[in-house]
Length: 334
Image 1 (cartoon, rainbow, N blue to C red):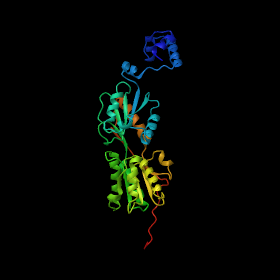
Image 2 (image 1 turned 30 degrees about the vertical axis):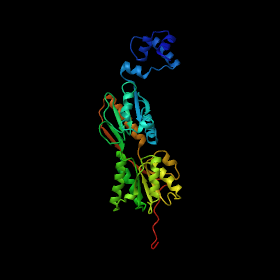
Image 3 (image 1 turned 180 degrees about the vertical axis):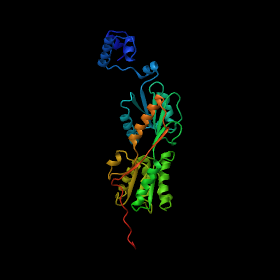
Image 4 (image 1 turned 120 degrees about the vertical axis):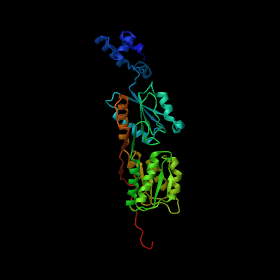
């Protein structure tokens, strides 16, 4: 459907239809209503590129992700809830496949979309957050932490400390860590929180109990097996995200271990899958949807030229379910 089709059906010129679409003066009220009725009847919508060439605005915000996984999906839910009444539409865009795992994927995506399809962008866990000329951006949980453009994240350090302290409170002292990717600031902070909690309890970190899980189930599989088949395995594992924690539970069950009777497992994120696994996963909740909503509000303000604090950090919270239990005391002489 084209603007010419609308003009022919309404019996007016293309210029008149353009004026109606762009709310310009010079069209009689009755004519404007007739054109709008035809637009509604035919389902016509002007292209984003044409709209941006005319007004230098599309009223579209881009959500750029490396891939659509549980964390980014929850963010999108929060963003979509917050966009109502802002006058903006959303365009979710994935770098896709292998390209999404390469450093700089977000810059390439911005170059494709910025200036013609979107007025601003929310970058989800970007590898770099260098400012992009001509288009405002907000980064959610960037790899390198808060720097450059405005960012939204959660308190990874405090959350990891809470997770480890929770296991310590259940009597566990041999606690394994299935960490995240070494290149991510969030993963570094979660490991630091784990180490701080152990140090405060007077427990030295055993290097054998620290493994890199990578935030993905296929990457977490081997290190989870290594942890649980040690000569002296951990009695509890803190996995740096829920997906790795769920894979740890599955590995434990494959090895004949019962969760939580033989092994306690705690995760981080509180994605929907954490409540659906067996047993349901105890985890540290990031307010993921709120993070998305706040990023959207921050970006709308940026586009409008409203000044705000450049970095927002939201609190985390413990969610107790059924994957952890108190460690049974060892009887004397046993």
